Length: 321
Image (cartoon, rainbow, N blue to C red; front, side, top):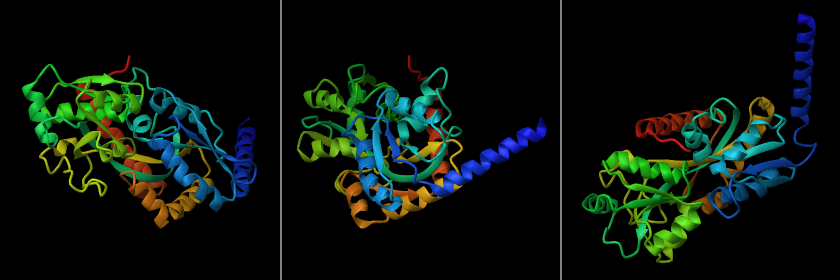
């Protein structure tokens, strides 16, 4: 029996190696996106899709699987065959935040995936309505303390990075601002403009058009450096709110057990795509920064993000229903 098991394992290994060596010639590659078309995650997927498929000489098909803040797509990937023909555009919410808000984790972000490469990092932007008296986030915090019990912050949904950034603000400032979740960033933005909420901390692709269109006021960016698209807007560190510092990440992952040959090829081609000046410019225009990391470095970065957000979730005693 032991010899049969060893023979079976050897055969499986040879088949996997053969598939990896011939990859990606069998069929199109499916790139799962866990959000509806038109958002920041879709932008990242679409930006790398064409140059990556040209490099691999194989079609890449974007497959939208929205739901549960990206967790439905991540869960689906855990069930996919590790053959290199199903990958996912990973981001902060489902890979560093949302699983820790569940009573029973739907998957283990650091154990059930093969990390291929990071694509970008981007600051979040804290915004309020245009006629709000605060000139920056420090002012807004002082205003919120003076109006305790009457202030709220919007998010694109419970368990999203927009939600946790608000909770991080509460923790860092000693505030207890009420969370108002929406079904996506678009309605959260509209109600903020309409005055139903007072603050939103979201990504550049969502907020920059509203800021530049004169509909929202930028109060701070959460990254370590000022956003080139908003050179006059201070960082949270400059405002003495360094404990609020955070960045969102995006990258490619596959199911656990993806052959090393496939991971290495995908990672190498992705790095070449991200080195192109026009690709860097496209991300910069949305407030993101191309931040290419290989498989090991990407995994290490995501591990640190998991530890950070899981700790906040424990300390704030947060849990999704």
